[in-house]
Image (cartoon, rainbow, N blue to C red):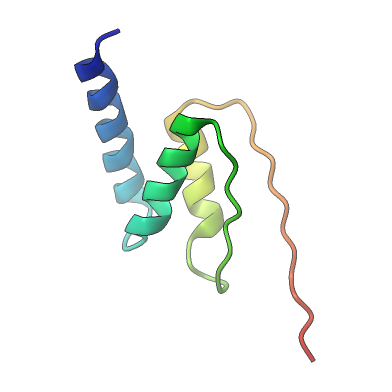
Length: 77
């Protein structure tokens, strides 16, 4: 596999993510970087910002069999 092929695959994945999640460029960049480096991502934010959708779209984009999702809600008083 050549560098150009890998670059094309990454760009295709990024375009696919952009079609699913609109306006969250920083989040999508970080998800792809984490995927490439084998790292972990803690996705935080307000409800309704497409966090779960972005992670599921990434898993679908790389044909992942499963992903682990942990949701925690703060209980502010």
